[in-house]
Length: 455
Ligand SMILES: *Cc1c(COP(=O)(O)O)cnc(C)c1O
View (tube, rainbow, N blue to C red):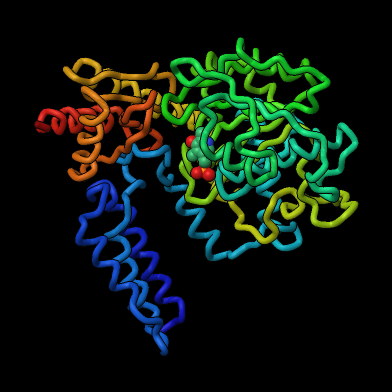
């Protein structure tokens, strides 16, 4: 028996899970969640058989998963896993590469460069844009904001990485009212403060009202603006041309949170949403949402060469090497997973047209759901369905909350709640590569059926 027999068995079990995902309940039965106690208990004194342990994990753990790899998960904005990504993830796990430095993984270094060039091309960004892989869009936001902070302070003669922020000139941070919670969190932990920001009011779709940008001038200090491509409830895009105009006139830095929405740049049919978006200085996005790779994969994209390095080089006076991108000197991390390998596999297998089709499929699914619900008594679609998000209320906030609970209980599909204008609403996000128009229509039918059964 080879020491890898247990791994072969694990691979079989993993594939059995993946191929059965479409037929499972989306949310596990409560009994399956209770059964997780079989994985706990006291720390064993002695080891256990590897095959038996992995079988236990697959059986007990697998039954208590939320099945977001199938077509029926509409919660948050999570995305599933494309087969190319899953396969690449399995190969990558076997390789156990550390992507910190080219010398630690030539393949990771090469695929960093390939995916950088491909993403810049696909999204139509300036050729000099640098990218860095991090754990998700939260950290991608923070990575960009830290680079922005340091670049803006360098512009007024302050070297933040060495001098810190105590006594530094104040940066004026401007966000929309509906900036994602993780942007505020990131502003907090990069030292810019989650509350000492100017919040620009939003319109009824959550778009920043560029006409209400504050009256700030050169005397107010460096300016950092955070805009948004894809409001997490409505999918709305900020008016980037106006915001960029305002920011550029003040020598500021414009950052865009595009955790899922940035991918609209890859779909020519969404060009009306993305006008001016490419003028931003930095962007945060996720691979693990709409690109449908596994967790954890966020991407920071920065249009100012050297800015990431000036913030994250862990060697004073560090200059980039002649050969290769050193990830540990461009990100908050040192050792890191080679996230670019799955991104490469997806870009290579889908190509430009496939990524555009993936985005369109999500948008078409959202329209199908909205159209079906809109003609049913009691349902109100609260957003303009411009992307993959549908925001809906059934009668009132309380009834909507009960409907969401019924949907989650039923198990055929899954969607979650949000608060919109002070009341509960149901948020439906179509971001799995598996969700066809037929699936989306069926999901709307399930929602209508369960709504009819509420008293
Ligand atoms: C999901 C999301 C984030 C946070 O991304 P993580 O990958 O969960 O860290 C930030 N902004 C928006 C708009 C999002 O949808």
